[in-house]
Image (cartoon, rainbow, N blue to C red; front, side, top):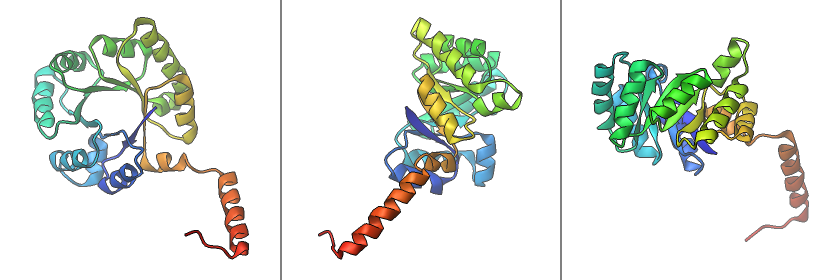
Length: 217
């Protein structure tokens, strides 16, 4: 499974990238607002930190304007992945952009039928929103499972990018189902390493080592 971080905070991105476990970044208009910078400046800096795809989202809702914004964003860096909404105009733009060799992340997916359309349009990534599906009383993981089955049925190349991750358990469940990618906030990714028995075991080992009076090297 690939790990993307869902943030536009350059400090957090640098920290996670330095671990050697980060495969990409996803941003959106809300995260750009939170960063306090312009989309061009922030995206350019992020792209200089990570080698993998950096999703930058258009805000246009009509095809022609989407294509204009996509052209602008694509010129920021070679690893920019254009993020488009799952609408008819978004799917049309997706088809044209991927046909020209650009990476596209189709976002705001809430049904298997929508994911099927995105794959037909050649999307590089489909972003089903697990947490938001859970919020309305449905099962976000069931959605991931349905998309996985459909994509496997027809050998679609579109990668399932599990989004709207709220907990470390979401990450585990998405991995068990077979999502290709998970994008999560920095705190959630860092929390994956945590376990009370790990902390307790390390504490015991260090205390016993102290008693030996030895040093390594």
